[in-house]
Length: 321
Image 1 (cartoon, rainbow, N blue to C red):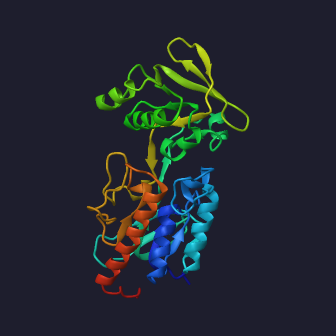
Image 2: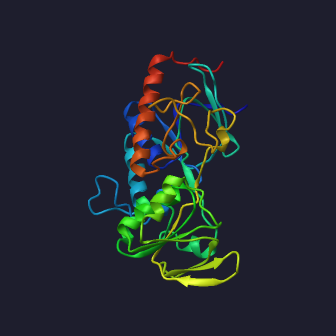
């Protein structure tokens, strides 16, 4: 006898601040949410040592602890948190339609509403020493972690608007910022280039790449290489910020949900509604502008409220015959 397909009222895909906040609100609204954690339970914050800018933690908190607490809060209201990866979706385009989801290439679930909170992954250089020192001075978010390097010398890798903006931010709080640009020009807009060039404590090095991140437990410096001459040089810094972009974790929704050219899910107006009825997107999967834990949590709340209101407007779907 074939296994009966599970039917859930609200399925949450992803377990960062957006996913767990959505779960808290959905559970309190009696939507009986089921949350699948994905490949990285807790999301990007699990790779962050200190979180100092999330309201309610006057002494700060480390990222993994914060995510455990968010999970416990969601579970306290009845969220069913499950370890697993959603590997395929078949989204209905009908109001009141049922969405079909496959977990770990095997388990099938039908959902009346889906909240997507799959997040985005920061792009790194994939140097072993860089990966080893993530959380020890290597960061992909200057706004998140720059405060810890106040008055110090840091370096940032990147050439686009985000890199220029983060370099400008760091220049306001750090002693010196060395900006490493792989090519002989910046991709940033002229306005952002002018801003960077106007700051005396930013040094831009063109045709320069990171060869090695130096330090055992924390970043003590970087070895850079000129990709034209092959010349190598060591620079003393205490922080290295990678600003070469993010990739939204939205591949499984391609062809079904409207996205921009880089894969971020497009939502309608100020809501979290996607182009499919009953499917909502929150957090970094749809936000490429702010990418903060607090803004992700805010959109998670919005998605749960949108799902609750959507369910209130449709008839309860009939059970499978």
